[in-house]
Image (cartoon, rainbow, N blue to C red; front, top):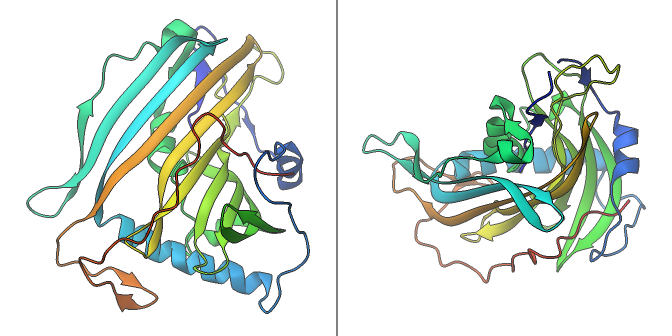
Length: 296
């Protein structure tokens, strides 16, 4: 998940767009992934890979919109190992009797993030819905600089690795900036690492309100043998406000995917998916205590 935060007592506005090259340098070292092979792909061009995964992402977006699931969101402000403030929400994404998509909140105690010195704005909630389960479709690819980084083993998957950054920042619009892993068999994104942008910083120390965003990792898992849907997001980051650093953790779980029984056709590679297919063995979820951030 990607949430923008502001120090509750601070007052604001100045967009900082981090350049793609700077973003690559800021990526943390890998603990569990295979070594990054920077050689060019064989038997296919970089542009062809981009076109394929963007087209598959468009199919994925349509397909996921026809599934119900539960999303469990938790954001914590930390002081060492002590939680000093927390936001927690659980909601089901469902359809009403007319087939319209809706959210049903099943658990939402009063947030006390302010006790930890932070509060959430509209950008935070937008990131929860859209940036964390990031989708890069053929309709949106032109808005981004896409840089081929290399090839890397991600668990049992062999992946092409790309870095993304928005070409320009349009007013009141949020973007993803970071790294994606694309399976070389299905040409679908199986993992993302990055953050929501733009950020707002008080770089000139004029007492402006700051909105900062922690870096997150989202893992996907193959559902119904076809699409790689997001199943788990984790962030553990230090936000460097002018008034002091704030350590936050975020965990988002996407659970219990079920295809909605409507008359809407879900296509995969141009063919309609049959209903009631048996799920293949699922890729195990990442260890919550030891996420594997990407390699430089």
